[in-house]
Amino acid sequence: MNKSILFFDIDGTILSEKTHIISEDTKDAIETARKNGHLAFINTGRTLEELDDRIFSIEFDGYICGCGTYIMHKDDVLLSNLLTKDCMDSVLRDLKECRIEACLEGISTVYYDTATTIPFICKQRESMKARDFNLGTFEDENIDFTKFTIWLRDDSDYDTFYNKQKNAFTFIDRGNQFYEIVPKGFSKATGIQFLLDYFHIALEDAFAFGDSTNDLPMLEYVTNSVVMGNADPALYSLASFVTKDVDENGIRYALEHYGLI
Image 1 (cartoon, rainbow, N blue to C red):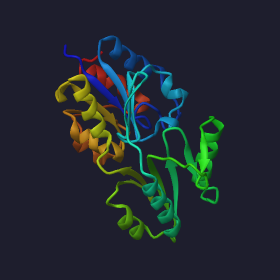
Image 2 (image 1 turned 60 degrees about the vertical axis):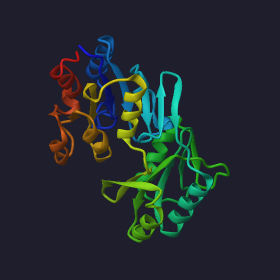
Image 3 (image 1 turned 180 degrees about the vertical axis):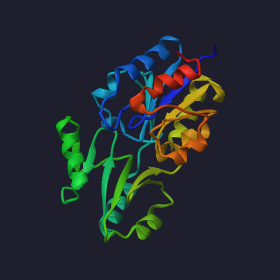
């Protein structure tokens, strides 16, 4: 059996959005794949600071964070893309002028606007605070982020914001007026390509597991694309294999299907 490299999204893929945990069966399946000699990496839109003990409860070989903007193998940082101060200043200015709510995601700090009143954002901020994430505000003097997410209000001027930032960032529509914004030239697919080159592994030995629109680049890129049963059915056409729901041990089912465990 060739040495394969496995890339796992988090939310809705290994982490249940119903129970908010990673099942023991999923943990065991991934650990068994590693014992069989395969590499296992997280490949997420979350930045490093947004990972928590649930993710670290599994020993991965490393992490692709922030949609390919930050890559770690064990304790070594292999890639870290940083935005310039001028770029970050322009984002902050345009968010304010266009009346758009946002979360600015950094490697070591996550920033929220203290003026926001949107219940979902307030709840998310309090949840992160309760889990001891390092949180900052838009007013911080040395603000430093690598990507961000936005939520549109009824009075938001999305078109103006998009046209001002489209040359610097890729906009991923996550639905329900929610967008994930990533620097141009980076994606979950570029993170995979980086590690395939780094480990000298062929594309046909790469497996990607995902369930949402920000997984599209990696699902389209790899030869072996696994879409979770709980995913948006629109993703099914991209799949080499549609596995079971995350809450029905879908990770194990897929790894067994491919003979990886």
